[in-house]
Image (cartoon, rainbow, N blue to C red; front, side):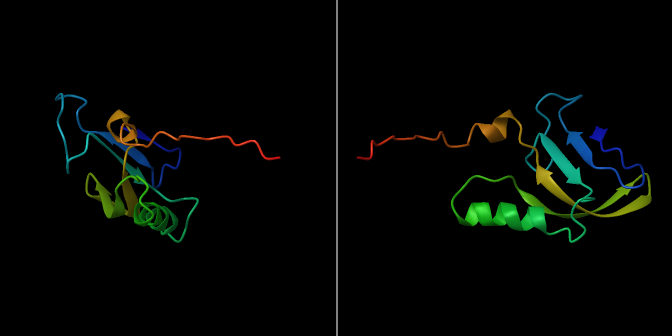
Length: 102
């Protein structure tokens, strides 16, 4: 588990297969809990990934979560699928064609 420097509401990176190989949670090996300190509206990441998917582009899963650690309520966060190797393998390869303009 890795987090941000914000000690009151840390951002967390969860790795579910750290101790048990190939263990998944909600179908994912890794998950990021974003504290959204740079987005007080909490909506930018969620909307952006949704727009990418609507446009047919691959984007991580993303939604909202109420985070509690050891019974302490840390409030609203967004969670998203970590861009691990399994996620990056579905990214399209860009093909660029150069045309000489006269």
